Amino acid sequence: MTTENRIDYLLTRMEQHTASDEECQELLSLINADESGSVIERINAFHAARPSLDPQPDYKGGIWSNSIREVLHSYNTRENTNTDTAPTGRLRTLKRITWAAAAVVVLTAGAYFFLTIKETPKTVAPAVMAQKPILPGTNGAVLTLADGTQVSLDSARNGVVASQQGANAVLNNGQLSYAGGNANAALVYNTLSTPKGRQFHMTLADGSKIWLNAGSSVRFPAVFQGNERKVYITGEVYFEVAREHASPFIVIVNNRADIKVLGTSFNVNAYDNEEQINTTLVDGSVKVSTLSATNTPDPSTVVLKPGQQARISNGANTGIAVSNDADLDKVISWKNGYFNFGKASLREVMRQLERWYDIEVVYEKGVPDAQFIGKMTRNITLQDLFQILESSGVNFRIEGKKVIVTK
Image (tube, rainbow, N blue to C red; front, side):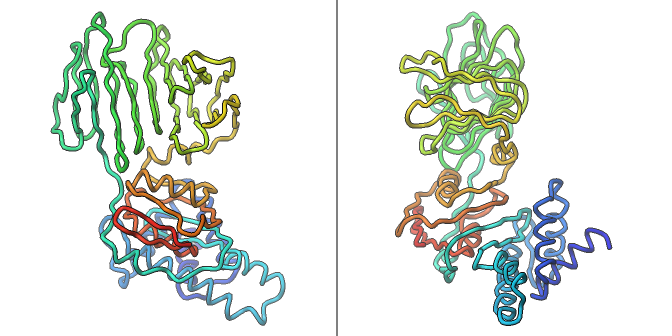
């Protein structure tokens, strides 16, 4: 039996609520080891072929919802019918994959998702689905020129949107690039900022590429001059730096950290409401230093190798901690268009959703003790995403742009 046929068989067994413990675990293992995406593609094809699901051309919300119901009902049915007769070992396995131990797999259009929670599940609140859909973020940004003039790039047409020091800022299909310029002109800084619910990609005058996540900014010169290339950032930014040995690239992060590179790719997460400033190196080499109150590098300095992450506390200055096994796929998932919640707490997940969906999150009765592991597209309405989260026993109430976690 081919792998594709085996996946179809397992999905059919799951759909019919007849899958054994071993078959459920086999499907979970196949999904977890799916580095190429072929298993997820087969799952999508399986669901798309079910006429009752009425698949849509882009995001298959019906497939998502139906998959949740199938899997949860299959697990709960097996738990209820096997409790009295199953041997002890079987009960332990069942408990591990049912609500009691709360390992839930949701097979989705283009995603897989695992939820873990330590509470008894509650009834899904229908109010979530009755609300006007809260759409995901999209491409957009505001360009603030040195003289204070602001240009909204959400609505601007293709072409030159600004000219400074002989350099043209050109917008082309949602991407901004700087070209030309007089290297002897006075140094002027512009700022590109993305509000909540927006992300953007730009190319600096030296050819370096920058991706901004929601709620981020980069302050940069229209034309680089002298023996260094310096930019200032807030929020989360991914860099692919053009190599210039005679002119190192310097990133100042929240006036707390200094990153020096020659040519490399790395991600910086420096949101104020996160616990740490994380600099993660994808390739090349960077030197990360903490900054003193006078914006000069402190003695705390580390040189990162690919796959390492430097962590600086957003609170007291405790130096720099280095992780040698950073999850690169998780770190840059936002840039590649999806969420990757690798052992993320509910509070951590909701901070990401606040930025991407431009919402405010309030916890009515404390923060549920939940952990999430998995991937899903960022191109999904908030209500559809909440169908997943509510299946874990965490309930939500939506009031305009405010989300109340009711537990």
